[in-house]
Length: 277
Image 1 (tube, rainbow, N blue to C red):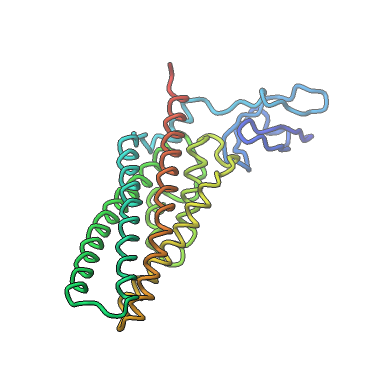
Image 2: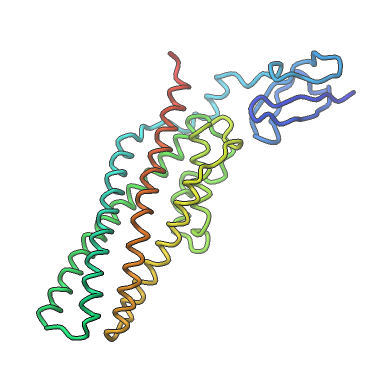
């Protein structure tokens, strides 16, 4: 039998198939969505978008029945507060490290001054570690729940599961790019769950990941330098690394705050548009 042309109503990909499958439900090879083919209505055998029926709502509901949409508004608000607190704490660390750098640059200082500097640095480091740990736990929890939500909203074909969207942060080598891919797909699927592949990712994703990589690298370098410091000069070099790391961490926290806000708002908007009046 002859072939006919048609357009996928989900991703608008132009396709061609044999007339033998007219009336059947097939899967689009581009967006992986189901569509039902009706008989062609134009003389040249082409089909209009309106003549390709998407799967019925019940079928779509079955596809997302494994996942339940869970509200993230409260968790997102808490995360925004924590990211803001981390940015403020980075400024405190920056100031404290600068004081240490000035003290070391003098060359000579009293034992009292040295003890006072060490005590201040230890207290700041303790609060920083506690705040960072709490923020990391809640952020990963948010990532997992947000990934479940887009699937509950009907997003299909996502290459990274909710579990691995969290797990890849801890896997060496893969942690350099897979968490970014997971967050990129999450951002796109939150914008348009039913046709997320066609969504252009926002520039904030690249900026967030760039600052994440730089901050992580500088933080690790500063930690190793501090552990290996044996004299004034090496301690000054380690302190310089910490200062640069603090400077980078401030915009990172701001970008993370904006990112989770955008995704949460997009998911709530998508859910509202799918909710019957």
